[in-house]
Image 1: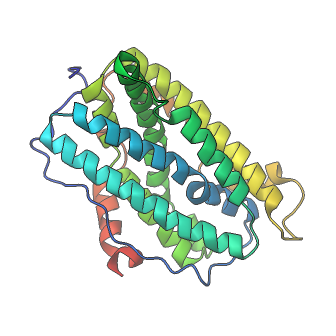
Image 2: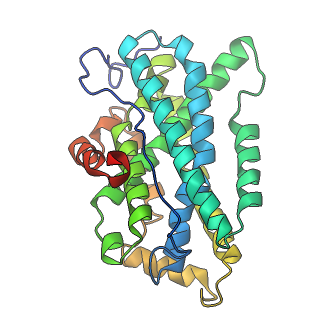
Length: 293
């Protein structure tokens, strides 16, 4: 096990246990543009539950591979809970994808392509021995970097009031806030798994930079694709203008987040527990309509 005094810690005194919640969403009445008057912002949000779940499946598989290398019993428990939560995320968002597909947003081929690419790039590659161990560490570093940004976006979803003010469909609002709250709740798990299995700063910094660029590229490419596949005649012609407008008005997180957050992540003494408010996340999860249902 690696040791890094600045960021390594034991879970023995952690009181909060991460676990998957049995949630249920009814998407039957969700419209194609579930943020009224915001076509582009709707598709930015769509990336979160049409595309990112493919990465979450790969992340859960990677954490499963890491479990035999983790001898801290509390961290093992948190990793197991994390895997359960990510599996629930993927399943819940799959329901949203099927519904949107049924009402006209044809994304099946694109999502299948992303799944293939994620598996080819971030799968176990069939390696063995030292190469397998090093590739596991590399993937943990990449996923730790990605989880930093999903936690930041999750915090934004919890604290932003603009989506509710715009009249976002209640089911979809609950879906993204529930997901965001659990991202804040388990924000530290992948990072701590990486620190336990490897802990090297240079790898953490390098993979964090790669993760930032990869996520930003995925968001931009996926948003452009979803906007192009939108069948609505009144969606507008120039999506970058809508993108800038939505960003300025705070309807979507700013793309600059993928740059401005890196200095914080790259600090040697950084730990994800410094992100967001666990109290806000747990408060929402206790009152989420889907979780209560």
